[in-house]
Length: 347
Image (tube, rainbow, N blue to C red; front, side):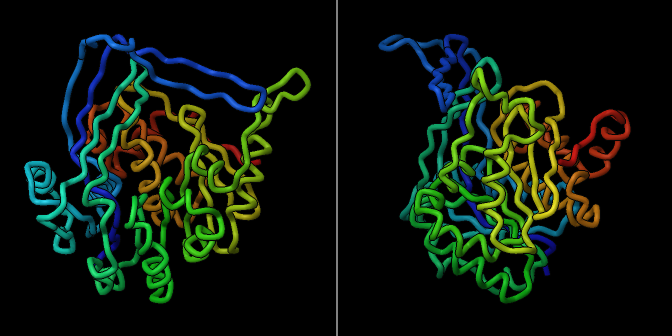
């Protein structure tokens, strides 16, 4: 019996930081976009370099275990130096790896993370085995034996099994937390609705929510100051479209602007918890998995769960590596006690 079983990707992440990186902002009437750029044709000096294990399946399993939950993980890797690194990273972990799949014909997932001087990042990802998870790879009995199934973003052909997994979990009274990824979102809302219908908690960032709902978040204009609202009206419209069942809680994260949640009755806003930012990689995984865990711990106190998630996410971004700054529940609670002014709001 597991408290939590996670399914998702496993990668070897290489972090690269250069002082020559530029952040370019492009504005249109209805949209703002930001790009990381380097001098074209130049040899760019690297100012910092590191390698760590990552991927949604790995990051969230590590976090749940660190929070004290009996955790199992399902992910797919190859048989190469990168898979050796991933398996070695779990050597001293309490995560059960008996359900992972290793395929010698495939390469292990690999990512190059370009880190900006602001701490944000652009990821160059080779999906490898992560994109080749098949239904026959899944130990459904392990899912049946879990209290919570956490579905991290899936890639490529692996998205084909999402509906089967979510259906099976719900039919067997397993609580489902679904963190949608871009691969599944690109299949359209009608495809996504079938999976959403089986999820108790749905997690997306604002860009993913926009992709799923086809709702753009409008910037301020001379006539309309959306930034004066606690929660942008377009974000509220996203919530209404994404919430298709009464039992669901929808969460949308918005980077440095904080996070929002909706339970069908109230909207919640939680500001980001301030702290040093070294790299934002893994922040979303830490936030989403901590929210799911904290919701159970706090007896479904949505606002408090958002605060727990934000504090743990702040711990992750303060370190290189997606799992290096993870906090325990005790550490999170001590930080909140030391910051009594930090709180959420309800709209």
